[in-house]
Image: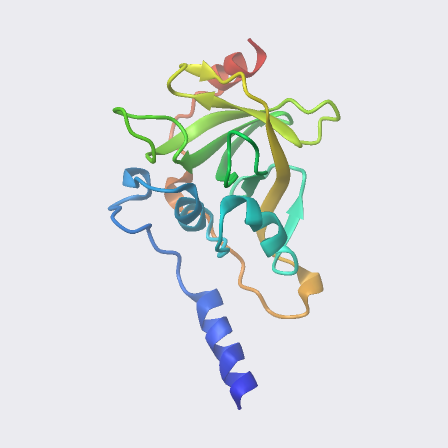
Length: 191
């Protein structure tokens, strides 16, 4: 009976609805770390430091190197990102330019942690495989100069090889704005 009850607890957790991060009236009011924000924005229920999400997704969610709306992009640990970073794809502009919605990247009003919607993320990897990116940075009012290593994308679709039922994740309705600046994203990416 213990095995059955643990499976029922797991199933209940898997089908629970996605909630807003603590202290936020809406997704975009959130101030805090990127991980709880990405969990709420994507519906992907993974826990732990951002850089650990890639391995944690194995057997639970599909992973790949193609950006799709609602997918979580997982940044590797690096000298500038000691815990990695996670962001949610809000728009695909071109095969090498997307927009993300994330938290705890740029400073706003002198503090980190705020949510940002439809931020430009550009693939700068030599193989065009999204293994290295540059991110728009509010403090510079443009694309940052730092290249960040990336594992890839975690999709909200269950990994069918896992051999168990996993609920499909659903992205939050506030993931993207009504009028994202595609032209600005392209200018940022290619300037």
